[in-house]
Length: 133
Length: 283
Image 1 (cartoon, each protein chain N blue to C red):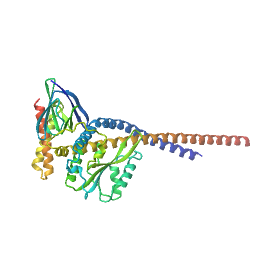
Image 2 (image 1 turned 90 degrees about the vertical axis):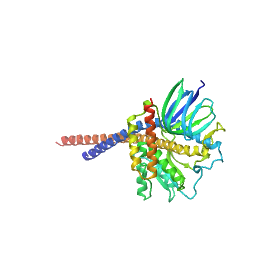
Image 3 (image 1 turned 135 degrees about the horizontal axis):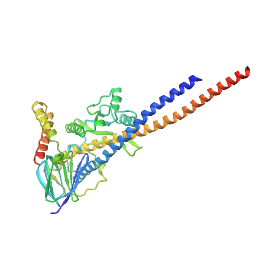
């Protein structure tokens, strides 16, 4: 299968730079799959699970939102945080989930609720990626 | 004579203990500088990639996007994010930033102060400022930067503020750092001119406007974080240089004082001998 270059950058530096066959991720407007020779594309990514296929094997990651940009040379994912299942701290994610749930029940202001919702979404996604292993 | 020698000796001791402090500060600053420089290097790819992407999108949609982040709100006040240090003994680092700030900031503008040195400067002059992010230069937590950006962009979209600017210290090299003022919002397309557009037919999912609404806060986060790390790097470099100079000066001073002390000692001995000889001769 034809491969293309994927580059994942985070504030902590380049997370990964590798050649892959297929990239699956969920943008704000829905799930998309990217193969080699894709048309240039720019889109925001939801807080979601992301995976790519390399040499026939699927690698899964937890992505805390970000941005994808495809052009002729390479596909770039700009993420605030990304983790492979091995890197996820399950206990921390579960604690974050409980904290967010607690906050959702007690919070009054819209901003607090919105923040708690985002935190809950991230925690749930991490748990899902970790347990899907 | 003896009291003169005593006072020189006391001064040598005090200079020596000062030298110990400056020497220790120098070593600490050197190791911190190495750490923040690495961080700065790691950040570069992220930061330049985000900027590149924003530039490409803006360039390929020139004049077609009616986005709130690209327009200046004329009635609102300007928000300044000012990065200073929390520790002293770093040469002219804070003074330079604060001088730039007092030249730039007008009455009624809002200041978001990072670093306690700048905060005490403003408090002393009874100027109001936002102190929610004072410790950002110590912990350098990306989450706090995200929080700051969310707060500012919400204010910007509600048209409460007209412009967002940042005052930081550019790190040129280990010896040169210059305070700089940069406009963050509205996004200044003129800044990106050197970046060329690789593709004119990009698909924007769902629309260019939505993509920009998402990307610009990310852009701000990365830029502010980048400037923060750069300023802290400058701070450590500045501290290292000034502490190095202080240690050298202390060394020189000790040499001078030691010479004086030995001279005084010699004079005292000579005096004593000549007194004894004179006494012996008189008998």
